[in-house]
Length: 229
Ligand code: CA
Image (cartoon, rainbow, N blue to C red; front, side, top):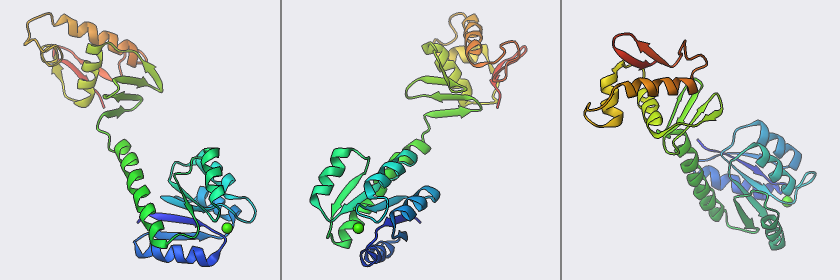
């Protein structure tokens, strides 16, 4: 269930928002002070925050800024003054949406749902990304065709990248040089399979701590290579 935090000092408004959001299936926590709200927002995991601007103690501007330094979740800021909304926009605090009070609770629910859906798409596409292969210290981004080794980007030629990616996508499978040549060079084994050996050597120099004792691409003598997991 998605969790929403409402930071709002006017209790009647907070309760009304809570009721509507709960009816729509959200789990809602209310904080009636700026300081308490900020602490709760940073300490717990929420999927969205509804943040009032004028609060006793630390105000919504500051809270928004501090939450943004730590978290990427949607923040909807609300204020009784239209001028404040313009100010929020102008400050570029990273709020995702702005609403002027009074607003109807169903309007709030609609906006919450829209932001939640958008955020899920963004986060979901990162998490379920099949274009990223991560094996121990190696991270291969297939879309960007970039390789990071222990956090450091290494430059690969096109064929080196294709060969590494193919092996990493099929871990623990032993391939002969002929198979790899056909797979990557796509010339139906007409050509020089020594090319494969040369490319493996170059890849190892980039990804292995010690090329003489490879931890990733292993040589299976008399057969070929495999990516060890
Ligand atoms: Ca207020």
